[in-house]
Amino acid sequence: MNQYTSRSGRIGRICLVVIIAAALLLSAADPSAAKTEKVEKPTVYAGGAVVYCENTGETIFSQNAKRQYDPYSITKLMTALLAVQHLPLDKTVTVSEKAAAQGESTMDLVKGEKVTVEQLLYGALLLSGNDAAYALGEAVSGNMTDFVKLMNKTARNIGCKSTHFENATGIQSAGHYTTAADFTQITRVALSNSTIRKVAGTRVYRMDATNKSKARTMKTHVPLVNTENSGVYAGKTGLWQTDDCTLAVGYEKNGLQLFIVLLKDTEAERTNDLKKLIQYAEASVQGIQVVKAGKETGKVRIRHGAVTRLQTYTAERGYAYLPKEGSESLISTKTVMKSNVQAPVKAGQVVGYYNIYVGDDVVNKVPLVVRESVKEGWFPSYIGISNRASMIIGAVLLGIIAFLIWAACMRARARRRRRELHRRRVMRMAEEELRREQERNRRDWNI
Image (cartoon, rainbow, N blue to C red; front, side, top):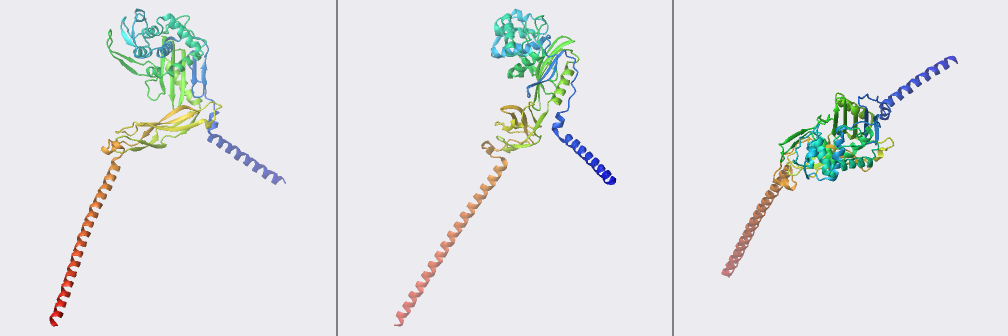
């Protein structure tokens, strides 16, 4: 009995070890297990900071988010937003004396200089020109007092209850303040505008000469915008002193969409803080891989190409990001090919997008590329016939023509043969008739 009990105990312990090992293996293989791992919150030098995930609608990092700080020149995102909402880009603005007199950072505007709204936007967002921002405010409202009222009204309308503006430029003032939470909302609204997104994401802008000034070249100051594949597509910096800086940026990579705001940061650590928060967000927000890189996604039509249809492939992996309560059943996809792809085409060229939807919203666009280069085709390519198809069609046509010629020759030969046979038959009949005639004559002579 004791031996049996001992053997049963050993078997039980072995089974327990096997069960635990299997559970560990399953947890390692289960993606959901990784999702439960906590990512260590980074330490940043900024006084106030927020990272907002547009995909999930959640704030995934917050530090003193409701404490009030000076926004400095990121204020110009609000100024630019109101400018594009109220003014056509090609409207000509004559720079006033007050605008030209604005100090600190400027785009060197001169009183009486004629510039467009679009040029002022680049001056305000790339050069952080206080003169450009002031000129935009005057162009919108006619005077700075009314423009500041419009700024504050707009801030309240989009839910910013702890923000107050006193100027269009961001110059330090006791009554000019915001919070990281509020300015995240302002950044979201501003960068959702395609014009501001384009201007605030431009690396270099060259402006033609005006009636008062020579041509200008403007370069961005936004960290990581100049870095390939960083994901930071646009934004605005602010600086009062080296130990008092601000930053507001938009980020989008692999379908992950973030808005990041830093207040009361240092010039030395601002970029590092931004990188830390991006890494934290990428690790914290779990994406669902919807499509692998290199997936075949159908063929694209190549206009005027030696080849008129090419297989396309996803250039990278595509992800969707869901809120905590979201279901994967909300995810759908659609392949959208460009309709104007024209030869010559180079291998790696983007010819369409693999759209990933959550509900009715496009949350990611994976580029579709071709792996072959295509030269311009022969004339038939203009009606959608490739060079190979042209050769095949040509060969078939030549074959048909050769066959028709051969058939015509054979028919002619058959006709000649029939005529010859007919002639011979007629000759035989004539000879036979002549022979019978001679035979009749001989009989008549014998009689």
